[in-house]
Length: 208
Length: 400
Image 1 (cartoon, rainbow over the protein chains, first blue to last red):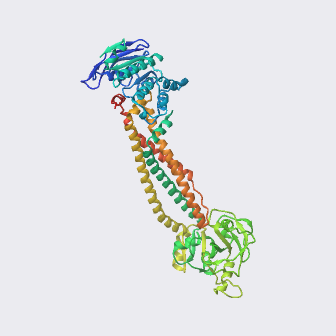
Image 2: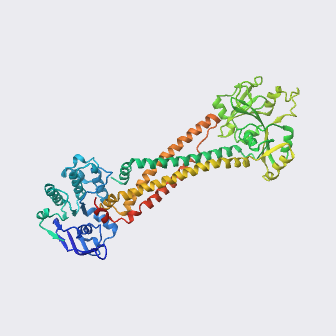
Image 3: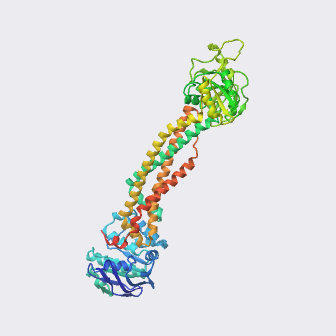
């Protein structure tokens, strides 16, 4: 459940972004297409509560995150939003398993009913769960990135160019994984990309 | 998963840097603790051994030597003085107590002191078992002497002439008999053998100093008089008077020891400053390692922010990393210092037959711990500055 109204953001006076309004019903996926430099990542960061808009409102589950205090926003983001980065970011000193543990710990969520074991199984990471991220293959690392973005069952899953560095086959696989994970936690999946290949996988598309 | 675990993982992920920081930090902590304690123990041991002796009167010579030999029993005497003359000095309205001592003999390295019962009272001790020496050739021994030489009441032995053990010049014809053992004091008296003045005089009669058959001790000599003032104003006049108008020397133990401490304090101060410099360097090293953590792992910290951790939690994370390294170094340093001190103390016990205990060691440890804690907080405070300026959006969109 997501709704944005009249969101604008500017880094400097000259580079100002005016984003179209978005409204999603529960579990409805969205593809945001756009060339680079058009403010895709900025929009993603606004939706994730990493940036605050100059103007406008962003409602997630009826809460306007645009007017939240930093501290509240941190907590809200940790619980309700999951981000899948273009290149997976991890804590390098921790193993795959410990990275997932840390993800839950900092969101203030306990590892209920073996959530970590489940996600490892679903994303085929069981065999590498005790390895450090820098020993993983590109595919494994990408799947770990997805795991870190969805493990806490967020309401919104934001994916930033998840397929740009993948071949056609893996591209489709990743989209399917993201879709199925979003469905499991009844989350809105929002993919922001310039990758035209995945256009056909989504019915709901916004072009920036 | 929690802060401590994450910090621990981060620390062991960079073993070399951690090892260096821990090494210099624990070394400086060990040095600081050790030097402070040694200095304290040294001063207190000597001060304690003064036992309220305000002035020592003995033969002319070095005043420090007189104090060391007559009060602390760690040097050779400056010479002897006639007892009759010395007694006249003691007859003064400012003087409360004047205890004669005669030293110069030993048994297996333990000094034999000819004196009066007041000497025992001066050292605030008394007989543990047996009786006080009463007649000639009876001795009362300090607790350490009894323990280390396994001497018991009824045992007899022959003393040797001089301050160190030697078998050639022994007074075999006058064996001494143990009649009492003193209570332990942690004081110099523990390692002394006490007898009356007459015993010392009799033992030396064969040397021809005084060979009169009627055992008249009019011309006998003593080594020194230990003097306690009745009125502290005596401090102002008496020493100068004695030094000027008699053939004796008067020395003030407190003054002489203060002079000695001033000398030893220079060494202790130098080492303390060196230790502080090392500590300063290790403080910087800790700051650098924390700052590098904040800078190099900016992306990880930003990631943790997106996980829902507040800015304060990141600061706590940096702090706990510093604290963990600091705490580990502190424990290591304290163990190092304790081990070295105990080794030194046991060496001293072997050499000087004196048991030494740590003094207010816990307080030293606590003081230093608070200091180190302060350094960690300070290092953290500077290191976390980038966290306040952190732009999560910028950091995570610069994906490598």
